[in-house]
Length: 346
Image 1 (tube, rainbow, N blue to C red):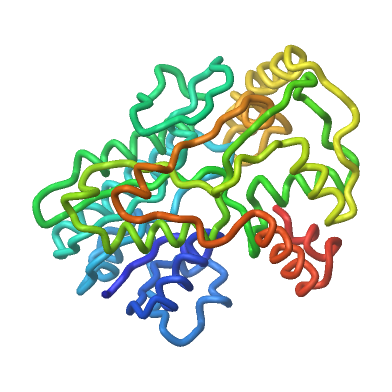
Image 2: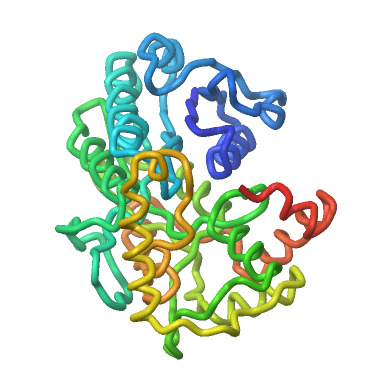
């Protein structure tokens, strides 16, 4: 098939472009002229310059394409409402319009379980796709990803099949800005506190290879099986957060969390910081040191049922967590070791 991947200069999008090439597809990627495209200058990848705000570049990008994998998004925790709306909602809407008009037959949207996170909610185990969208969102990222997903799913039509995938906590090699490299950086600096309050926190994570496998399977599944649906995607294992942090600390020479902060205090601190971060100059361009969203990810159990993806398009993890961690360590060593890796974390 002829495949278009957005966000290919980023972490998951780059792996998705690689995976589509390995699967034998003719792959095109949409990239900004300001993006680092060093890794994308490889045989089998066609570059189209443009962005989600440039409708003409989108028309060029979708020309002759069968499947769009839309991975590009604003995923940071800072920015104005206008910035998040433009990147995550308006950009998705423009790309969908161009794809539909250009004769694309399938639109695979990379969403997130964050779109389902409810403010103030406690532990949730075995969450499935019947879970409704929340009344109150933790942040602009969660809200705009939810709105974009709803646009995608309601845009399903005969001849234009849309599907949304929700990989949880994507991790793996070549990640320089996700949750895992940031946790490693904080532990190496000895600055990651324990906010669990002594509770066992269990979560689902998703290795990038498993997310890519799900995308490629969804692109090939019978339309009647997946049309207009959303699916959770995760690793096979349920992860104990403390045990996972201890293992990361051992692998990369960090200090596991020892200093404790009570959940009540961490929530209060995060709330105060969020109030300060309403100042436009801060909100537009600087990551808050703590947020209720981050606290929730580290202190509340959240596991996801992937049986619907298995049933409808044959999803099965292609790599286990143990192998993924050894592979991650090998990649870090290949780029110069932990200290060199940490210099690239942003």
